[in-house]
Length: 120
Image: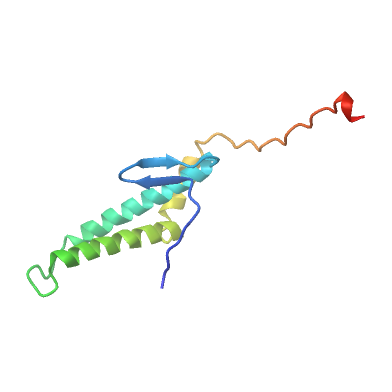
């Protein structure tokens, strides 16, 4: 059974708010999260198209509630697949787009302040 996960994300996407930035995230972390979210969207669309083929349109397994459940199930599957990298699409997108990022500069340590005359 797969439990709820709380991966550390630098970007959070929701249809109501769009993309939100997390302070302190590097451009590479933001790119990785955006690539995962794109993969989830792609998988959702792929599953939605596959579900359009109804073999049992008026049968026992057709209802609005079941359609809603399957949609929710597909959305959750897409999120899990993107977060675990099961399809590998996010890593390919990240690798392709990372070439266009500026090189990361390591943070410099804080400079030591000179001793004041009162410290002697």
